[in-house]
Image (cartoon, rainbow, N blue to C red; front, side):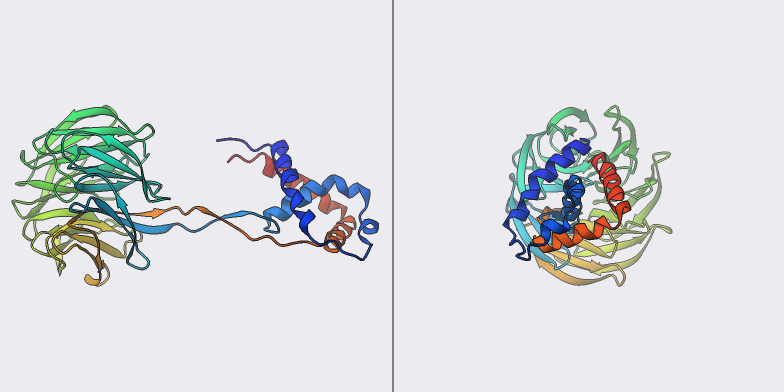
Amino acid sequence: MKSRTKQSSMKRVNNQSSFTATCKPSDTGTSHQLLHRTFWQHLSIVLFLLLSMGVGFGTATAPAQTRAYVANFGSNTVSVIDIATNTVVATIPVGVAPVGVAITKDGTRGYVANAGDVTVSVIDTATNTVAATIPVGVEPQQVAITPDRTRAYVTDISSNTVSVIDTATNTVVATIPVGGEPLGVAITGVAITKDGIRAYVANASSNTVSVIDTATNTVVATIPVGAGPEGVAITPDGTRAYVTDISSNTVSVIDTATNTVIATIPVGLHPVGVAITPDGTRAYVANQADTVSVIDTATNTVIATIPVGLVPFGVAITPDGTRAYVTNEDSNTVSVIDIATNTVVATIPVGVAPSGIAITRVPQAPTRRGRRCVSGQEWASWFAQTARTPSTATGIARSVVVIGTRTR
């Protein structure tokens, strides 16, 4: 972080103040009479404040917009959905056969696992372009990012490993052996607990979940679960992990304090993707028999079953907890579920064979504000008014000192 000193602030103001030269001066001839020479020492300060209030050019940051990023396995792309309108606003070419997608907590980067060319594509969400491509293990499936945004964990199904990416350099800094066939997003997955200490990896052919200590990148526990574990989701408080078991048609609930299974919940046929609402009260499970099971996490029972598209795969919940977005692999669509009513309220066409999905608030680029031209008479009147209130000038000077030392 760079400190903005008073000196640097004043230099910036002096450089920008030249915009007033383009304004048409007043012809009244009274400007110089009204301006007292003692106020010229405050000119830079006044211009600075007026610019800050929007009289001159300035910048304003638009509100963050919520976007869903959908990995299209069959078209080698990522579809970007505007949640406000439920329309695709961008299509991003990535690697071959993308499966899993995860977004950093600040919404600035997306990491996409490309199973077909053993890479991870890094998306700049401001421009929706690929900023980097990272070689990883064989057939990467799903990605999960630590809350501090420093590491991305990628499951490599054919390597039986997890690749750890340093997000500052976009290079693999560790490779961790786990169980058999660690899969991704809607097939099996990785989920990072709330404090970033543990990663839970579902191993499809081992019928286990590997628990990784992210500080040491070592496996610290192996938990037996149902047959063919696929997706993993952690509750917001980090106390429970929900694991879909595709061959058992169940969801295993793990107590993360003891790393033991405390409940097994029957759901629909062939459950894959799972996501939990921000308040932690509901888990939404995509069953490949064209339904979504809704689990009450207080009782660990299914309270609703929702018909969706063909072969649902991945699930993601909006940050406000009002909508669930479900990818339908064989329909090439995304179903939008109203969580209040548990009904489908929209269906969005996307790419071919959509699989993983992640939803985030994406920061928007700053926008330019307009310029208002100030006449010589207006300047003169303002200075004359200030002359009658000496304390105003003193207060202005003090304000600039405070602003000038603020860090950015």
